Length: 101
Image (tube, one colour):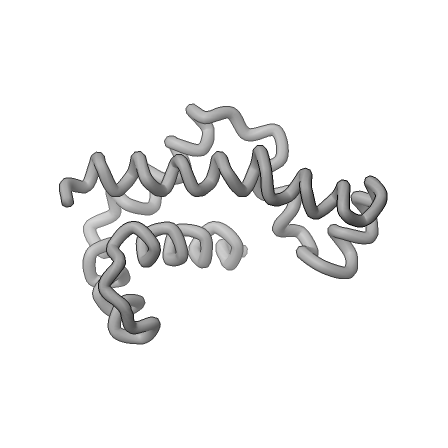
């Protein structure tokens, strides 16, 4: 699978998180954004907040275009197990985004 296809799959994943999962989670808690931020996801709900598709692609490029990405990917794959490249890419990029402080 080419890197551009892999990036596209990660973009779809981040769009899902932004557009569906997080809003559904907030809705499931009666719209209580503060509760979701403080008790469930912490700052993760705000990481994608207000990001356009271009912003998401910039984030993906900044991670996946690094010279070290393939090594990080291979280490992550070994640690996590499994062979689904798309799932591994999505999970690794999500880990990098959420622990980038």
